Length: 320
Image (cartoon, rainbow, N blue to C red; front, side, top):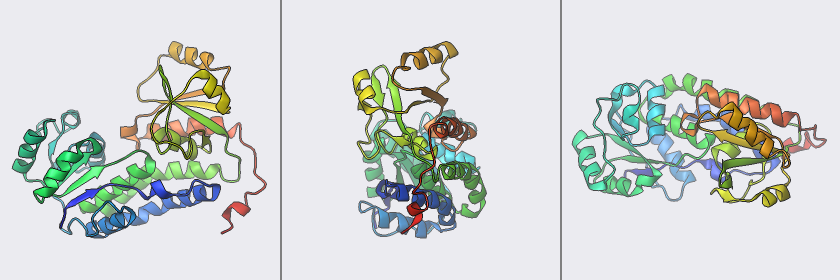
């Protein structure tokens, strides 16, 4: 049995129609039910949604020793108070609270393989960028999860999956619900209203729009808007001012992982005034579960709500 599991979310295949958004909201709320699955059941459901994943579960034994080479996954494990289960980390994770003394896994694949086999983990969690190392570990019969987290669906699915594999699903459910429920409630506020078109600016110099199925565009949908890149490429999209004007967004949005000085913020808002109002929030994807994410979504929701109007077909949207 190949012990490698490639983490994917069913969100990639969800409908992007208005009815699909309602289904997505319900899916977020029903996510809590999946947290009650055992590790084997969770793996089987994941394989069913991802043809690239093996058809069998990665194993029913509880994970007691985990090596995390994904800072995002490491943060999720820490949020679940599982620091004692972590036996090795990447360099960035090593700077997180309580992990200073853990063996650090180097970037070079041969050395990383030696370190990981020496600490004898039950599970190794790796980012997509280390898929080669994941394949080598799988070849040595070491169970792995390759993390592919691009938006909230991915993030909360991974969090629940890790909780299930480490045998703490019941204890984790309240913590995960605390982080995800406010976002679902925000999404529900926009039901029955139009969805203003919003352009998510990923960077200003060069000017790039966030692609579809990213955290920034997911924030737009949660807040009740429609991303101008909706249904398009998932990669960042280069664009110029003329192209941005042609898209005719009603609102511009930028999620900054670091604080922006007030003077710089004002200058950015003024420089895009001819296109549309610009909303800037602080948001760190690797802390998608934190209170700041809810604050960012609320700020964007308020701006979008001011531009939305009731839809006459709201009742029809729920009709099968």
